[in-house]
Image 1 (cartoon, rainbow, N blue to C red):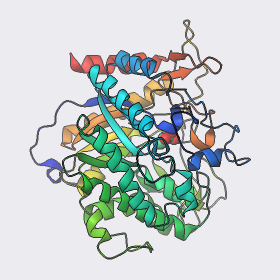
Image 2: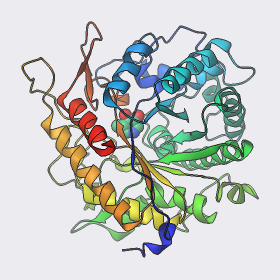
Image 3: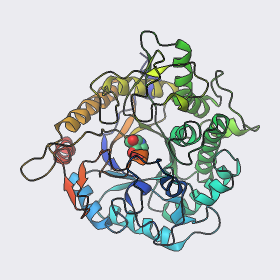
Image 4: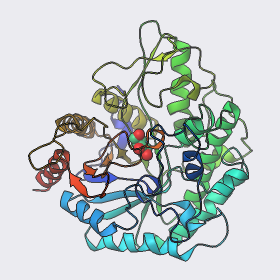
Length: 450
Ligand code: IFM
């Protein structure tokens, strides 16, 4: 275990903040309103077979029109923060040029509504919805996209930065880079492993340049990090490559200004790694499951755990152990502890936030009032929250615990077939129905502030 004195020294941690998260494409809908342009995900959803239920984000949870209702749900939870994302195609429909006023106005009003209820906004600037015109110009594998991101981020931070001090640039850039460009199961659906590595570098560069462009703000990045374990028969070489792509690439660049030797990252220009190194004022950790690397079987056991997303790894398979969520993801809170300790040791003194943690379950059991009695989700959240408490007690500086998600929503290539929400959405009416986990979460928040 890393020496806790590496984390923060003797700094006393403030009480843990609580929040819930969503993202624009997954909840907003209103695809053709407010001057919004098209994104890579709008186009990807139109490809036959790309989304398992053939659905899209055109209506989603209709949150664009139901801000008051959704913020009332946040108030009911008693959370201190709300993590949402800004849709780049609402701000710059073509990905470049001046801001679309209606787009900025929408998020401005959301921020004021949150602040008026004592809820701290925690916006993410890029949660995967790249303006389609930028994809047509080459997308993230092209260096210019990083500069386009910096311009866009500046427009949003300049409008809201007087009220919003803390920002995340990118959400889970691993997904955009490798699910988007190596396995192709996410937008833009490319299968070009070298381009995936170039995309990873440009996502980090865009983050760093945007963060450094507004030194008065508290700008971090959100990564999906995890603990990578070798199972019997698993190839240690595969463990090393998976760990490097999932964790080391991002943390190495941010903490040390270098990429793991095992990776050959193209497109790196002189000075880029100096720009990236030290550019995260805080780090968001999204954690769902550990990775177990077993011998090659040819099977894909779990959503997103596809060996094609790990270019260069010797043959392997993912070997999750039960209990599994409906994504096929192993439930294991120890992996969260390991991930947080390891991350804090690599980035000493950098505050951490759990920016996503949660689970999709079938939600088959209804209580008498019609709400889902999701004891499995409660168990998942309880176990992972205990893991956060445990590492905080050691001095790992975790500031917030943000659950994924406020609402059941558009789960990317899984469409609406997977449900992570504390609140379910009635399919025809889009009525919000809090689950048992919503009430449990509210009680956690309340009991800790008593
Ligand atoms: O729904 C996603 C979210 O957009 C990013 N992190 C993982 C979640 C569950 O798959």
